[in-house]
Image (cartoon, rainbow, N blue to C red; front, side):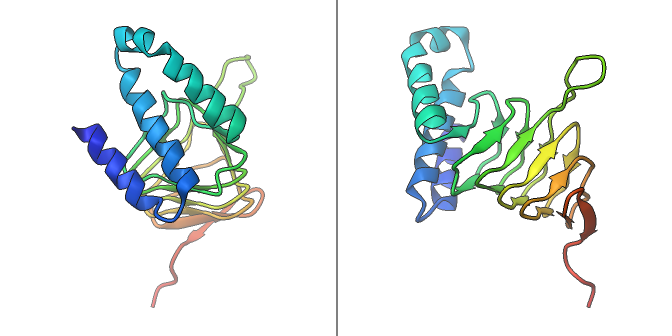
Amino acid sequence: MASMWNIAQDWAANRGNPKGRLVMLLYRTAHLLRQSTITFLLFLPYFLLYRLLVEWVLCIELPWKTRIGPGFRIDHGQALVVNDHTVFGAGCTVRNSTTIGNKRLPDGTYSASPRFGDRVDIGANAVIIGPITVGDDAAIGAGAVVVKDVPAGYIAVGNPARILPRRRPA
């Protein structure tokens, strides 16, 4: 039942955005079906269709293993790349040409992927890599390169990203 609620919240979050609605409907279905080996094997053609349509046709790399909270919005999803170990909270927004993932470490292994709190807003062309945490109600500016934690309520801007308060005190 939680999955149906997530679909409804994604649908509402992507109002006026048919591509975002389609991608999130396909993602939620794949994410639900991958929970057991039996359903994964039974619905293998669906997973192949998902990869073909979402990744190759729509150019959005959003693996079905990624953990995404309800109300996820994809604005202009072209060239979006998300690592499958990334975790998003509820009500997050991502925009086009954004890369979110891990980084290769000197020993050849890979770091963990970013974890986002609730209501995080990610601008176009942002790059967010490494084992970082982005807190609730934070924002990542367009074109920012983020490789360190962003506290709740702050914004990361620039390359390399500077961390600033999101709202100025009154």
